[in-house]
Length: 369
Image (cartoon, rainbow, N blue to C red; front, side, top):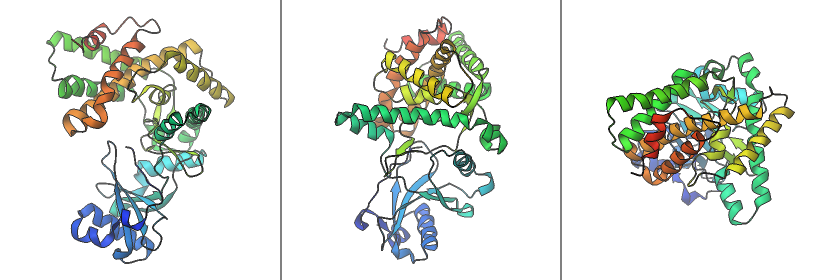
């Protein structure tokens, strides 16, 4: 899920509540009725704007009042009512707040209406900020922002013990073999199936699936720390003060130490990133972990895990991009990332002495034939 947020909206840019009553769907009506109650105003005084989710079942809206259109908040609308005591977003938000991690503030919760009201962080994601920095030639600013984003990963991992102490939902979930295998099977079904409509002989399909299972088994055996689970530059926002803020953290769980670093550095790229640059960022991350007193990881071991995690994570991303392209019809957003991701997987396979996974390697190498 990614929220495209926009600050300082004037009244004409937002829809009045009374319009939602007559032309909007049930979701919009729920949002407007909730907002009217929250602000203590009639629905005609409520402004709202639908926002665009990424790949989420939840819907997002910006709300404000006609009297104060610039003071906006974000409504997260779930498809059905929920118990706030069992909601993973609220649970992980509480954990991250206790760990002094920068997440949006929760303003109000209406579980029976499936609504969480939260702080509006604006519309500038880290991805947008870095793109703008490149356009204006601000290399030092981009380097500093990237360092801060990598430091946040180490800070998340520093909250591992706290997650167990608080009995957070994140402490009960992990990237175990079943979870990792499910993601890799999703890749097989939707990349080779939905997207490429590719049929393999039974023996070849079984060999590819065995390679995928081996990747899952090896990664599941790695030491685990708290992970965000979807830590890329679209899930970090740059707020009005220039601070980084974490969003989409409800799926936090225990996983390999490299899990969050991989998507931040290599995911959603139009071309595989420079290898020397990746090594520099890995070294930075290891130094930051050390300064925070986290368990030491030998450099060679870390690099091997990073490459293995790159393979799994990029294959999982290819499955998502393929599903969104072939099934949902959002290829204009996602299809451009598929082939670069495959190239990144093949490059990672060539590192760290990885000579296994021959069936999977062959299937990916044959994409252009």
